[in-house]
Length: 133
Image 1 (tube, rainbow, N blue to C red):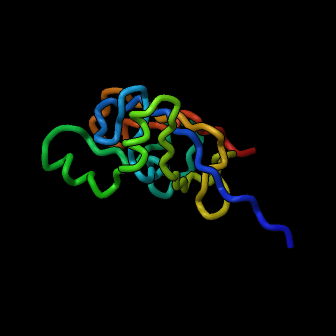
Image 2 (image 1 turned 30 degrees about the vertical axis):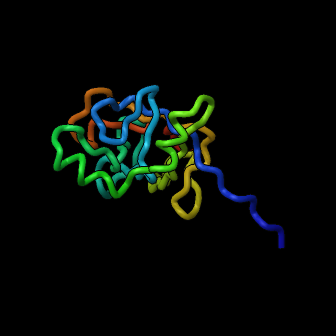
């Protein structure tokens, strides 16, 4: 039996500058991000019907403290070094996307999360979404 190569997380480009996990340079310092269908029970047909459920609005100290359990501390430190890339794990349940794979993994090389100035996760999208044929 052939062994699958180890899964490599996609590079994440995130422009959601109002999120506690946002890092200048459009990087995400979350340990894991969860990409979901925006409407529970509905299958996404376009990027605007997806969302980054890990979004945590940068609005107050209690909100920031609540997001600390999902920080990629090692990635945050390496982000300060030139040429280093922060790579959170990505869990995606949007199985109508061509990049979705069994085990709720994303097989895209890079994903883009949009929603600049978002106030809630429903205002974010996985711009990389492409409908599975």
